[in-house]
Length: 472
Image (cartoon, rainbow, N blue to C red; front, top):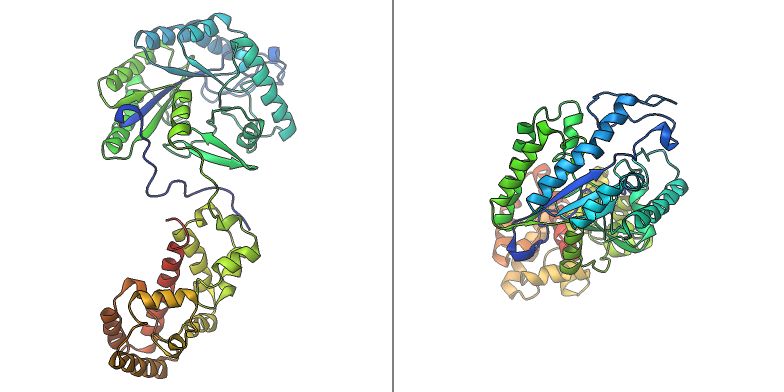
């Protein structure tokens, strides 16, 4: 069973973004241009629009025009856009526009103003409609039509893509189409990352739904400009501090002409821009600029070994001896739920250890018994597994004096006689002296205590072995 979602990402140590001029944060303003591309029977849609307007809780009107809804969207094109255009150009803010192709076609003056200002116009799809139930072939055709129409209207093919009201297929379909510097239909990270589909590496620049004026139009969203400004400021401050501490991130701000373009809200955006510009070590950029930087600074790497993508034979051959002479653990892990989160040492150790812990008491005891004595007869006869040989050598157990060897032999014999399994310890965590000290201390334990201790050590040995094979 495979779980396709990636819950690990960059993990504890994300890459150094290396923003230009040592910036602590990359700030990116997105202006969504959807007015004229929304659901409307005039556009051949089955019903009116119901999404992101002043009419909170609006419902679609099947087969009818919704005059109030249409006029709210018209406000975005007629008034809101120009108010935002004046603000953003006066403050020299680089902007990425998410432009719905049919909306752009219906707004020639606004498109001309975007181009004159040097704004990037990325594709926001063919129409501002829901895609979740759209068949893949139909969505593929809509993507192609959006690219063609966008190119005809703006004079350039879009380099970025964001559907927004996407389907589970959207990112794969756009990756398959090719020709995009980035896709933004994800909210999964504070940094860009590479996504692989069908052998093709596609850069993803995550977007935002929290630092977004859409929350003026949702229940329990922003009720005033002050709330919007406060949220943006706190987000900026947190990310700026992380960048100053050596972990630079990216902040996206989502805007809509018909929402933030209202006079009662736009001043909050103006205050936030002033706040951003009052800081040094800030890179305000278009999304395509971020894409170019990331592709240059962090290009896609050749696919590393990924346990979750192996076939069973390769998986068991590679990891069958992580738990000593117990390939059944690897087989059960393979049959379980593996995902990208299990492609690291910690992740795969968790999957294998889960199966060890879930096994019967007899099976767990069998794993313990499969371990060799420390510095015992198998070691002397050079019949240990490669992992055990390296581990024992790391603590000098392959070069004992006669007296040390006699001491280990006596302890081994007494331990096995008392507990029924060999003494097990993560040798790589220890020295010869600390191993002997632990041996002499643990031999005094009762069996239940020592059984639990030995099992913990088996799990630790597995993790250390995996850390020698896989990243983090």
